[in-house]
Length: 486
Image 1 (tube, helix red, strand yellow):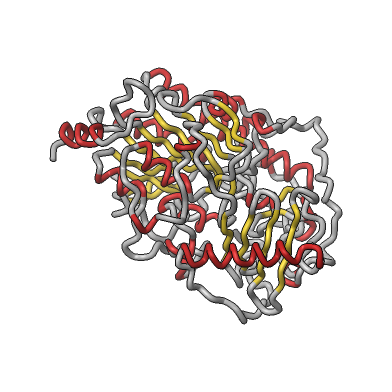
Image 2: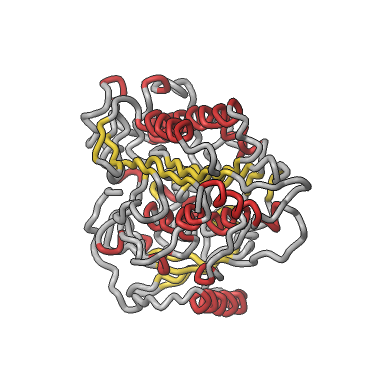
């Protein structure tokens, strides 16, 4: 099949979304690492100004109820690629044997490539299985976490040493890929930035931003964990325990102007500063699309791989089913087919990305993806279609960095049930309509007996529908062994 006939076949199968729409969209997926849902000004942040994230949101749809079904970097990345829950695609931890995709797993770039798309992957990959054979004509990725300054990157032909700031380099490579792509094929580009992953090392141009601003602490900053399950009390996620917070472990590779001990103020400010670099580079990509007259027919999805604690309950990092950890930014723009707006009603999850992309590109979803996610197209077309009323959470990395407990859970719009499945097993039930900050578990409250039973049944139905046969029941909660990594 020639490039011309491949494009013709794809266009013929593309379901038009607006009158006159005849060709499939280009696709750009952009992801940050550890960006909270509210770490952008369009989401109400009063300190962090993100004009290009706002620009993307203004031209598309911002989902305010967006979640990661597993709030850990690598598992989330596997979910984005495959549209599957982590137990199904195989990447359940940030390292070791379970850091690989299961053999034969199908990615959405593979399906796009097969349908005639030119496909590329640039930036942070963070999965042990290399991109080769997973649907990419070209890839250029950071090794592991990568470095903020003068990063090395790996390509199909070897390792390349770059000079400059990491997210600038990633944007450079993404733009070069777009310039050099074959012009007779639609394209799919994944561009994954490093920021705002710890340690937060901003570019020099933003090193002094927010110096005269006091960052307010969250209302639960001093809320203790005494009444939480043993698995939560045993986590290694308290801000006061961070080595750099205690004035140790400041990276020697940092420029001298940035070698400062960390405290809560500089923690949050550096987190915001590295996101300024992301926003600036997002703007470069949007500008390119405008100049090349590609914006109209390009579907862009922007998100983060998980949320992040910024002092809630005195914590940092992610890995738990509490709201700061699971809520993520989610923006979609497709001028040719999606009207701008804000969706504050429907719960969407990162599993949905692959399903949505395939739907808009006119590619049938493989049967094995069913029940793991849904296309947002009915929501974006505002046709009143029924939507999910719950979703399933899972986390399987223990022992590991920060000692978060293995858990499953289910969340509805108003309630959340968490089952910590290690010994000693425990449960939490939160009534989000009554207690949005999750200060009190109602699991043992007789008044919530019905909700407990109903949510427990829902969780088991989710496990059955997605063929979750993993069982760690009886696994003991082990002492912390991976302190402060990841």
